[in-house]
Length: 216
Image 1 (cartoon, rainbow, N blue to C red):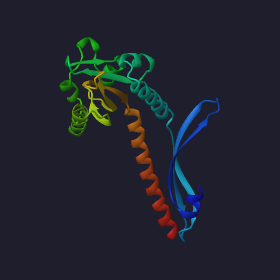
Image 2: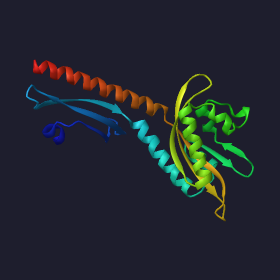
Image 3: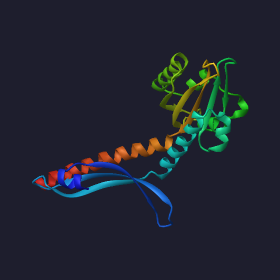
Image 4: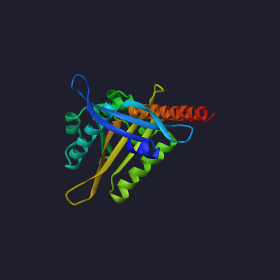
């Protein structure tokens, strides 16, 4: 608040607290200064959004990453943590293993078989296809992990966003034998992010109109 009051700078912060029933919540605050005719800060105006669900999902993701680093079986991890999907690829057999939640993210039925990489690519827009191909190539050629966000369309026309955190799988001889990935559905987060951006733009427009009025 001191920076906003003395220097007239806006700020965007996340705060943790508890509501009336003692439940932990997370809020994002976007605050803009309101200037008077002589450009002195005379007040402030802001937008507040509840991001509790997003923060909870983030904590689950961090927990799953720790398990992956210990090289535990992906499907075992899937059984321990909900709302996260796991896909594992075996280079030798050229086969994929999907957790139940992976099918849910893509809107697919497990009874119809496990999708191939070619099938998966059909869900994403061109930009996301390139990002996914580059990530796979980096794993295959350099043995390096990656973290990307992908935008796709389900077969029913529903848009979705997914975060893909992938890493290579090595055998005891340090030979690459496959890759595994955590998939997190971040569609809700993207929608909230979009609303925040729109709210921020509306706030800035209203502030400019207010300043104009004060100058006149």
